[in-house]
Image (cartoon, rainbow, N blue to C red; front, side, top):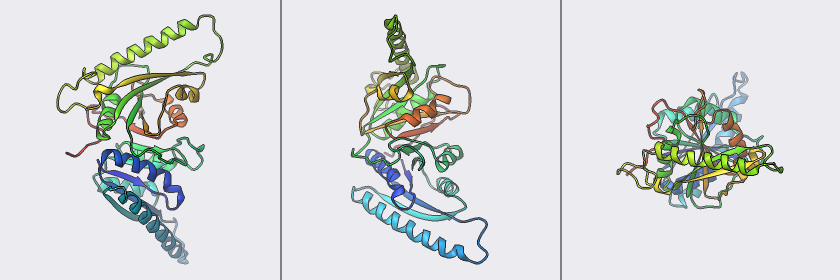
Length: 310
């Protein structure tokens, strides 16, 4: 896979760089670092824009040089480029259209809570303007882990569409990482004493067992052993975890996370299905303690999300 890391000049781009480095160390594939200088519109008729753009170009080149040196010191193959465009998002989308990019890594909105993920305008436009997975780092993200070792995929409860899990398995395979299913039950009374708490526990257990069955179906029966040479190598290591809590934040924290985790969340503009969380996706994204990979819905659900070179 080729990973496009969109850098904001200066320290604002560090979160995306740390996430990109962790993903690239796992996949051992090429990294394309990019900065986009947005051209003011309408142009300044007095020519004042030229000095401003030249200054922004210098900052962008300096940021790219520092980031490139840092990644190359890890033995990664890195290319860098800077360009001007009407907007940062349009510039990144033009790079996606021109180059063989498999995933885009970006930082969170500057208005996000520190340590949490929130989509900014650039991430939303890139997500809506392409069919690629978009990885988003929490605000202020620093990657103490050398590489990704586990890919968790958030699943819902509606119908039996297993496309998201299969495509997440391809991502896990490309990152040489284990695959885990996570699901969340937000119960406002979970922290209070109930008359029959064992009833709620049985419901949660039934949900977990049903998800395990759906997992086996979505991976084509490869829950324990890959069926063929093209099957995701991580399929045999799949686990299912259920997080329960009175709020979304506590439900996500109910599941153990590590510094080497990323969370895959499916996006969809259509009806809800088991593996596309719809309106719940925003709540999961904003409460995730780890970087999030947003996976757009494809009409061909068997199409691979990313490719790993051989």
